[in-house]
Image (cartoon, rainbow, N blue to C red; front, top):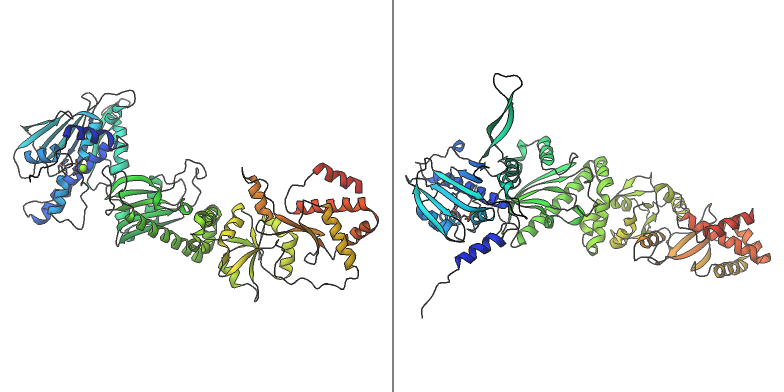
Length: 623
Ligand code: ADP
Ligand code: MG
C-alpha cells in the first residue's frame, strides 16, 4: 500500500481564509501586532538561556506607520525576524505556525505567553491590502530578505538590504469600495483606536507618529504641524499588577477609562486565580444604574482577554442575568480559542470562570450587607430589583445564591430587613412569614389586615415592587417558613374571641343575601373579627392575590385573571347593625349598602371600582 499525503488547494484555502474566517476587517491589525509581539517575546526567551543575547527592554518596540500618499501601512518590529527558510515556511504554508513550534521547542511554561498558535492570522492582512511585503532580518543572520505577495497568485522571495534585526510588514491598502472604507486604515486616529481596542495590553510599546499643532519657533502666532513619536498602548494591564500596589483611585480610573460608567464604582473585586483555569479579573459593582440598562441596547458581559489581547468586548456568558449590571475584564491564558480568535472553542473553562465570578460577586455583596449596611441599602435601592428577578428567573434555581441578599421593608419601623432578620425575631409559635402588597409603603401600612396583624404583634413585610410577590412565590419558603399574604383567608392567627351572638342566625342569612347581590364579584361574604376600625375589606383564597391580579392584568396576555375575593365585614362595627336593619326592612337599601361597601373595599385595595358613575350616584342617593 502506498500512503499519500493530503494536498490542499492552497489558492482556494487562502481565499477561504481571507474572506470567511473573520467577521471584522479591523482585526488584521491585532493579528500583525500580536505577531510582532511574539517576535519580540522570542528574543526575550532566547536571552534567558543564551548569554550572548542581552534583552534590554528599551530596544524593543513595534511601530505603526501609515502613509496616505503611497497608500501603505507598515507594521515594523525589532523582534527576532525571519530567515529565508522561515519566510518560506511560516508565510508560505497556510496553517504553519512558527510561534507554536517555538513554544513547543522552548517548553514555555511560566511568564509570558506567546500569542500565535494557528498559523493563519498573518493572512488577515489580505482583507485590507492587495499587496503585502515582508522585509525581515533574523537574529544572528547578516542577510535580509523580502517576501512579497499579491494574494492567491503566490509569493516571491529575494535578498534585500536591511540594517537592523526585525521585520517590516508593508501593506498596500485597497481602494475604497461601495461597502468598505479602506482609507480608514491609513488614518492615524482610526489606527490608534484600533490599537487601543485590541492591543492595549501588548507588553511592548506600540509607537506611532502623532500629529499636533504647535507654535512655530520664533513666532508668536504661526502654527505648524509637528509629528511626535508616541507610545499608544498602556502595556501593563492593571489586572496583572499586584493588588498591594493599587489604590481605589487606580481602579476607579480604569473604570472610567474603559467607559464602564460615568459613576464611581461602588466596589471592585480583583481576582488572580491560579487553579484549574488560570485567570485574572477585575469586576466592578457600579453605584448607579447604567443609563441604558432597561433598553434593548444594553448588553451584559465582561471584556474577555486571552494573554492580554482582546477577544470579546462583551462576553455575556461570564455573568448571570441577575448580575448583569456588573462590569469588568477577565484575562486568561487557558481559553481554547477558535481559529479566528473571536470566539471560544470549548466553554468548559469559561463555565468554571463564570461560576467563580458569580460566587465572588455574591460574597462581596454579602460582606457589604454585613459590614456596611447603609452602603448595601444604597446598592439595593438601585439593583435590588435585579436580584429579585434573579430569583424568579430560571425556575428558581438561583434561590440559594440570592435569597440572603434580599431586603424588604417591614412593619417594624418601616425599615429594610433581611429574611434572616425577620425569621430570627418571629414569635414563638409563628408558622408563616407574613407579607402585604401594595403600591406604596404608606398604603400598605394602612391596610386593614396589616393593622390587624400589627395589633396582634406580628411583623409584616411590605411588598411594594411588582416583582416581589412573584419572587416570593418562587422562593416559597425561607428557612422552612412559608410566606403568607396577610390577605389570605387562613392566616393561622388567633382572632378575637367570638362574642355570644344572639343574632347569629339572622346574620348568616344577611351574609347569604349579600353574596347573592354580589354574585360574580366575590366568592363569599363573611363576618370577620379581624378588623379593627375598618368596616370591610377583601381577602383572597388560592394562589392569586389582589396585587398579582393587578400586575397580570397589565400584561398583554394576562387579562382576566382574577383573584378569588372574599368580602369580609367587621362584626364589631356599627355598619353591621345598619345592614341588619336594611336586610329586615328594605331590600333596595341593602342592595345599595352592599354595593357601596364592596366598592369601598376595592378602593382600599387600590383596585378600580366597577362602575364609578353608579358608585357616585349611590353616594348621592344616600346623602
Ligand atoms: P500564528 O501567529 O498563529 O503562528 P500567523 O499566520 O499570524 O500565525 O503567523 C505565522 C508565522 O509567521 C508565525 O508563527 C511566526 O513564526 C511568523 N511571523 C509572522 N509575523 C512575524 C513577525 N513579525 N516576526 C517574526 N515572525 C513572524
Ligand atoms: Mg499570529
